[in-house]
Length: 435
Ligand code: GUN
Ligand code: ZN
Image (cartoon, rainbow, N blue to C red; front, side):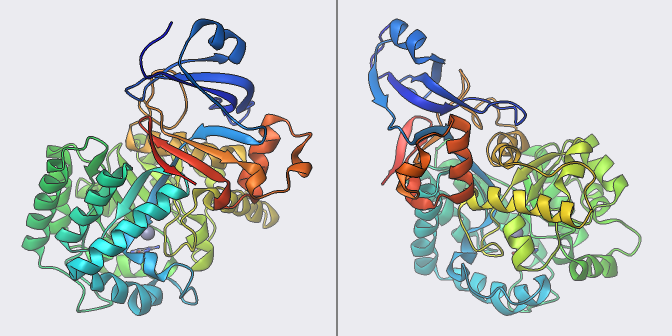
């Protein structure tokens, strides 16, 4: 069968989706049609005897894998990446984070920085990103424009905060916050790029009035929008939330205001109570685990094993610049480490994670959180080709790799590669990065 514009990728390919089974197949082939849809997958022998197309043969140390889904990061914080990691959350926000975010009221600065953010994440293999912007509506549109121009699948949120107990210069008026959010959503949809969508983004309960949260919950429902926010990250932050809402749990505050849906991404979720976990599972909301940030800001160590045991979907985020790396591969590595720390501290009853679960967190579970797992998150037939090719020998001496099974090569990629390994990145079939 030959069709104009088909490509056939041949080599080691991550087609598995069950972390308890083999993820990477040797001598595999997948056919991608001219619309960027995966139309066949099978052993190379089977596929090559039935399909024609341009053959893309992977090198001996290369792996084709699903693109990464960074389910939580802050675009305006990239200027702080790798610096200012010496304070816990609330002091960190006050001293480092609000000052840099407030600079994005300057349009030129916003455009320049957002272009660099999207280049950085795409080059690290992030094919889908859930971005927090700033409180400035034009900044959200500038970020979405960059995602559209550079070809990234993205959810872009104008941040809402009409209360700021930490910095009086960085907040909005309630009514303006709602109007600006609706305007930014219209403008983002108006870009006419189906890969880029607006997302409702109240910063966290301590920075939002009840009426603002209610309006945002209503907008999310009426316009069928995903929602992202922070929850239960740090003890000081939980205290701040309790001062404002002494009679409610953290999740209750969001739920009462219509902000907990099955497309709600709740970053951190370290200190959830058992009843909150139960409620989250019932609602189908997801946790976004951000281990790099949790270590850097000394927030805590999420027991993600117990979260998955409670039937909560766990996705993964870099949380730049709480996290000091824009690489989802680093996030996977840190997620494994978090699990091992819990095991050392005997805070986790089941066995620690190997590299496979964090890999699924950073791919398929991100897609599940956004309810786009019919389109992306794995390289299954019928899905859009959001993919990464990584040459593991670009960051490790090839001679070390010679006897690797396909999954061992993937394990080395997760454990000790660096961004030099990422050679090609595709979103919906279109190459959006090559090294
Ligand atoms: N909670 C409220 N805002 C933030 C933020 O910018 N980063 C992190 N890690 N937590 C937050
Ligand atoms: Zn965050």
